[in-house]
Image (cartoon, rainbow, N blue to C red; front, side, top):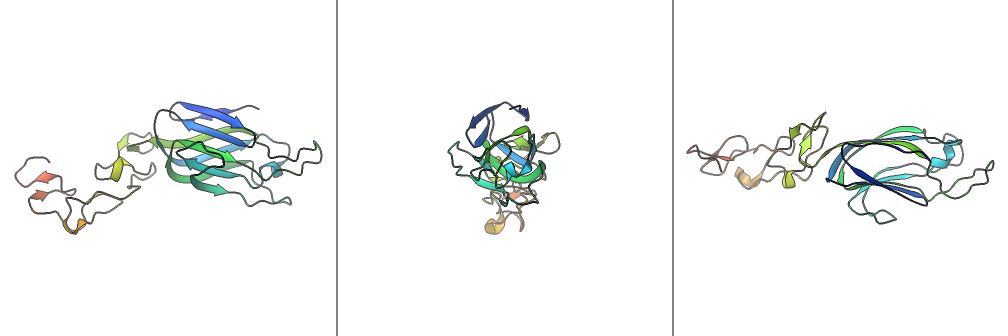
Amino acid sequence: MFWFMQLIRFYTLTIIRNTASIKLNKFEHASNTIKLNAFIADANRMSGFKLYVTNTSTIPPAGYLCYEDPFSLKPPHPDINQTIPCNQLGKYVIYYDVTGSDDVVFEIYLPIVELCYVAINGCPKGTWGTNCSNACQLKCINHHCYPGNGSCVWGCDPQNCSNNICDIHTAACSYGCVPGLTGPFCNMSKYFVNV
């Protein structure tokens, strides 16, 4: 089995039976797209696979299910080259398959992982954009934003906003600021002292 990993930062790859687990070591990442390329004789070996983003390495995965292939022993089988959108935060990307195969040529009936290329495109926590060069808005809860557009994943912190309401896409206060504060994010004092 040959693996080529194209990741933004360091990773650890673990393969256990029917699972390929990729740990993003240094940071908690927000993934934007996950690209899979398989090197297989028969595309039905991928039928029924699942793709998770999670913070634990437990198997079966206990995280966010990004994609589940509809299992089918009859054509059409999954495309062996796929780009799967998945806007999610996590420390692991897990390719999981328990469905097995009906490979009569090689008489292989267990689940098989035959990936040769996996690219996880995303950004480290707190950044977004093409090169992850933009900082997430400070008002985003836990400084988490989506890598593709910079909008807040968990919403925005409205503590300085009037009516406790802020826009999750821009993190700006929707209805102005509490008394004494100013600016789109209500983080500046009316007396020109930053808070």
